[in-house]
Image (cartoon, rainbow, N blue to C red; front, top):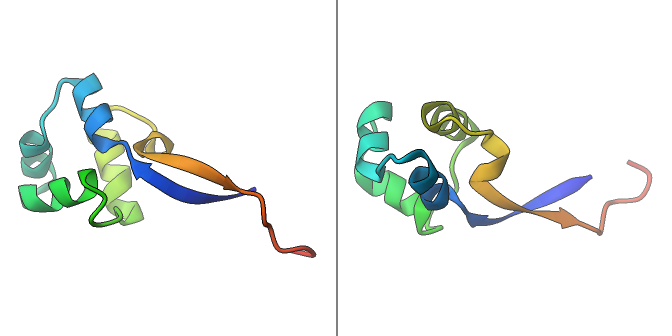
Length: 77
């Protein structure tokens, strides 16, 4: 099944983990503005960063976004 990315759930995952965006930025050697861009859906997390974020806050990478099933799959693939 194919999925579309919905809303970024990073802020919710940070709150659940008790960590802040500033902590995460420092942990991953990123500018805090970049983390806030992800949170505010201004930028999509690259897979490598999403994996690092998930590892840092102790969650599965798939729970960082709302995943929307794409019902219009291409036939024959």
